[in-house]
Length: 254
Image (cartoon, rainbow, N blue to C red; front, side, top):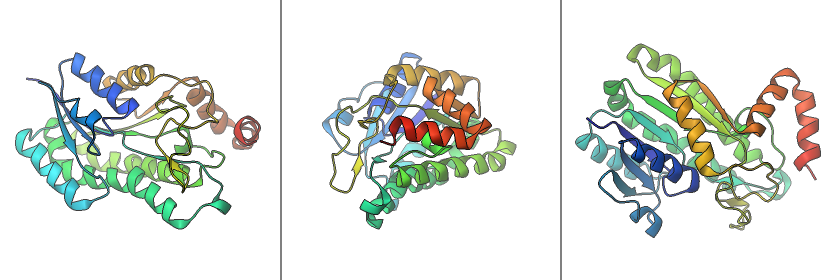
């Protein structure tokens, strides 16, 4: 019997790469994202696309009900949906911060809650796609870093609740992934599609990041840094947060 995965942000670069990799391994994939031709194009024998706005509670509940009615046991839920926000706090408004939190954090919380029983039945995995900004500061990313810190805190805490059910909660922290290069200023409020930052460096492809992340999932590693920048940032920040902050400001602080 095929294993089943649910992926949010599935029509994006990293989400799409993760879906493609799982399909080649024989998985059945529920692909969740905003309605779009790109999402529709994913439809196939192993992929069922669901177009919805993950910030709408009723839509999330309806999608979860449809998924679990068809596949009552889910092996893997990947929370890859997200947006970035590249702007100084002094030039930001509260609405943009709330939007980032709604998409990057609360959408994952809502879907996780609805799918808890199904993942428990499979003794499966919740995988949160975080970022270097989820464990360390990042210049001009106050909203984005806050949302990723919240995401990590949520899943690290949920891990202890779900462990008795045989369920793992894992966190992937990719470094700069080039999924939407050159589109950093897509919105007037500073929000943009992930992977579009113009100040990124040593960028990796979505396929390379997906391969690293899925290897970590197979091993059920609680924390999966993906890329040289992610590994270096994790170690430096762990050993000397002050040194990390200085290096970060020098590299992308302008």
